[in-house]
Length: 227
Image (cartoon, rainbow, N blue to C red; front, side, top):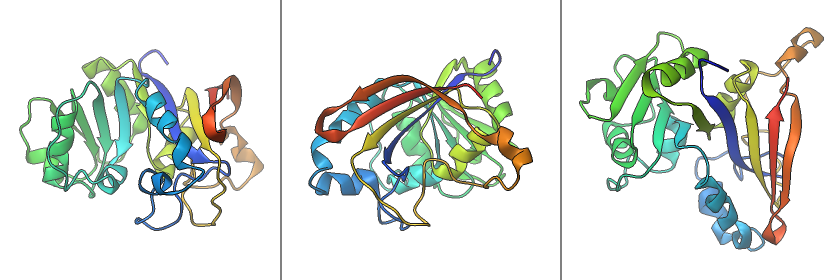
């Protein structure tokens, strides 16, 4: 690693690797699981574990918009610094929401007209790239912002970029006791599929470091990425 932060992919997933109940933006684990018997009882454990993750968190603008940051009242500042990768999902209000919430907010974009580019907030930094380069982003976070560890909690497509570019060091997954199914349902790692044996180096080979049986049939698995 050396010149970039240690990265951990931390997610809530179903047993079949889905990170949403379905393929619609109206469906979401955070909104839907609390309403479902058999899932609501153990869900709080995930949020308790989440509060122990790194003080830097990376997400996408799409996920943040889905969580309502473009419309919610401005929050009180918390202890975590945020990195958001976004081209079109966050409004100016959404950027301000994340600035109010975060110790520091670093927004990464390839859109020169992104609302963040014209905002002057003391804790906001914008990394503009003509083409998204995740390794360079991590190196800038390490060099310019003192980020030594970061938790990735994004959608499957962005998680897939981290995987294929060998930028994940740990995978920490809380498994909910549910099967979701559905070809188009987002999964833990999406994006381009491998198509030939020559591409097998793009796999993420894992070594199990921790396995915890939680209450209400939830399970936590922590892996080190070894290949």
